[in-house]
Length: 204
Image (cartoon, rainbow, N blue to C red; front, side, top):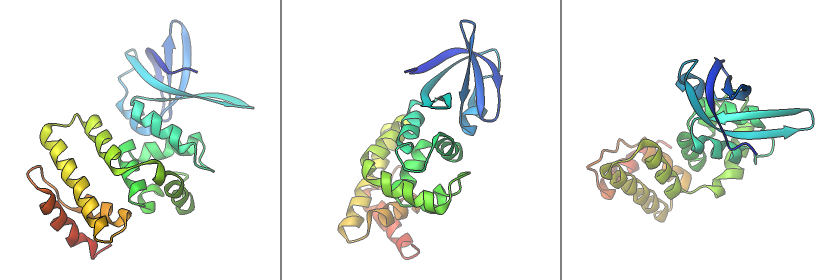
């Protein structure tokens, strides 16, 4: 298992990069988002990697973020979703956005990814929603954004608002969609977030 590759960038393509490690060039498939975020040719890069072994091919898939790689591996557990489709999903949306889309049962956003139709999007939601939870999703977003105490408090208020809405009888997906659509600021309390979210529930 190759956990990561650290070396000099030799070539950058739309969906792949070649990294030189002590004279050996590794071809690594990457997301479109990572291709745009890579340092220029000649600079060093570290990519967290997933080594795909099939009867007819050996391929390396790399990610600047370890979180993206973990979500990529999770997507591969979905029947009908292969490495290319999973890479396409993470090219269209971040790991954070994908987690929230799954939790909110937002098939429309997921199906916008290349090679992912509505049927596959529904399958992704069905097979992964029980493997994710809102608290972990909020914590991951805080980690990825380098959250300040104020941001942490805001995410806590969002989480509590979702719990309050589900206690009122709304589904977890509808509750999360409403909170995500609400314009939430750092100084808002759980009650403020709840009131803002309730305004959107009539449109879901």
